[in-house]
Amino acid sequence: MDVSVVIPCYRSRDSLEALVDGLSQTLQTHADRFEIVLVVDGSPDDTAAVAERLAATRPYLRVLLLRRNYGQHNALLAGIRAVTYDVTVTMDDDLQHPPSELPTLLAALADPSVDLVYGIPELEEHGVLRSFGSRSVKAALAASGVPNARDVSAFRAFRTPLREAFETVQDSSANVDVMLSWATMSVVGVRVRMDRRPNGRSGYSPARLVRHSFNMITGYSDAPLRLVSYLGFSCALLGLVLLCVVVIGFVTGRTTVAGFTTVASMIALFSGAQMLSIGILGEYLGRLHFRSMGRPTYVVAREITGGTAQD
Image (cartoon, rainbow, N blue to C red; front, side, top):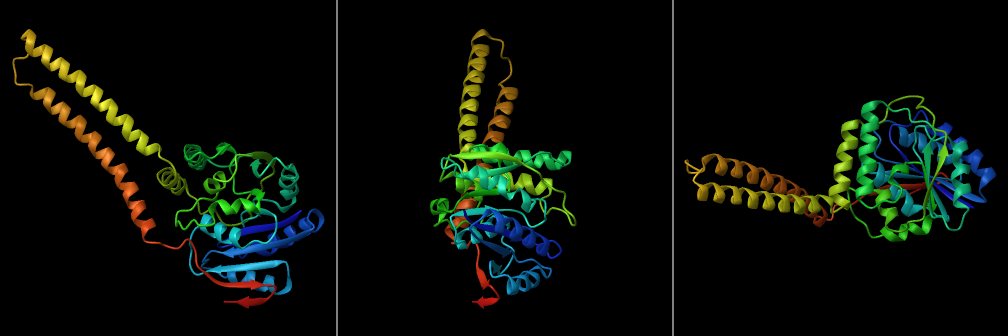
């Protein structure tokens, strides 16, 4: 295979050289031709300087320096659009995805009926809160129509032509897994070993994962709108029942007060439903507003290929 590896880089100066060297050793054995694309996502440390130094002596290494921090998936999108070869691999920059496990993904992709392969950890080592955040993200992916959402991970390999399905996307809240699901349903997962981070900690806190899940649901799914429809139907049905109770009470003479309790409860019920509906609709309107602004997904400052910089 001819393989391109895309790695979004943020605060990874200490792990970058070991990762690049490990990848090059593995790819020299398991790929006919290969390239490694480092997308430095506005990292505040000297990750960019380390990446440039590595590219100066490694002709297979390309570096994209983004002008600011756009987020992991936007950085991935920048790299995916820049790759050259037929197979694209994405992985993290923190050495949790061992380069030695890359052949496992490529072997699964050797099946011509498979378009996308996810590396599933043999052992999950997250805490309770982090696991809850990860499960919420996968539930959001499932609601967005992603096949095998429970197997999704940042360690993936896919056929590069799949990117044609999202070549025109200009969304600042892009999600690579959702966009890949637009192109194929032929997805498999394979078990791989995951290592612990040798230093630092993940930038994805449980709260940020939950927020990311909400962004995906409102950005790529109509599930909240369906929820509003179901809620409206339920409230209408309940209102009809309450109306029948009030009428029957009036006819039988059991109602002696002018229905203050019933009216108050109905006002509270419907006011709550209206506020919830307005809140969800407001989220959609906000997203439409931001997308209408034409906010760029990313902006590349320079591309460095084998030590040569181009603006």
